[in-house]
Image (cartoon, rainbow, N blue to C red):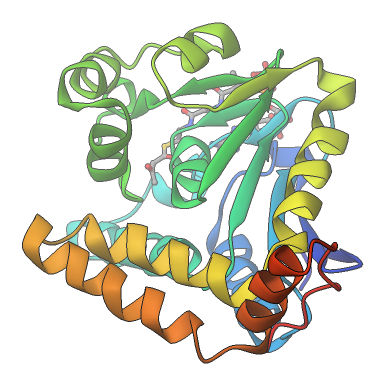
Length: 259
Ligand code: CAA
């Protein structure tokens, strides 16, 4: 991967989008690298959580690459949207939890990428927005769908129609991010949360992600059945036996084995 750096700290993977000259803007190469990142992380059963951030101090991701998009035809535009959507959906459906550590501009495709992650933490210097209508296009990597689901259709429509950027405090107020940190503390906070998640039974955590994501896509009657099946599947695991056994024996559980 040329534009994505990958580091591992115990059971946590930290991926950094690294195209600083263009504020980490997403061109086809970066999208291909993100696709490869997901394959690499998914193939490593030792990774229990992923933190995604941007290189440099200025930007998480400043959007899809405007230079690459500027000359696209209708069919090419649709294909570029599909390329981004496919990768972001792949990120969204990764079995392990994902945390976007938004360290600066998260505009257009950058905001959309953060929304494909499970959790968004940001620096107090972060700026979010969907500036696309100001460029003559719609959001194209899931923004019209995920923003509305995340913060509600009313506020999503206001942000998308107006193409207005918002700062970290407003992103927190509207529920786009879970927490804001001083910029220099962001990565430590993201890694700490990832490590906390990674200490819990990994199979159970992955089952929670699946239950929440898949349950949100169906009616409640079907959704609770999805939960019941995943809940039941945990009882076949060694980690459930250890977790409950430790509680009953009034001791701390052994580190979970992902089994
Ligand atoms: N695409 C391509 N290049 C980009 C870029 C983008 N989205 N964002 C920044 N860059 C490049 C700039 O062209 C510039 O390159 P040069 O030095 O070669 O000129 C470099 O990154 C630094 O950027 P600026 O000089 O503009 O930095 P700044 O601090 O003055 O401004 C900024 C920062 C406000 C983020 C500004 O760069 C900006 O507005 N960027 C575009 C943001 C945007 O509109 N994003 C949405 C794109 S559309 C989209 O994402 C569609 C979709 O949903 C899929």
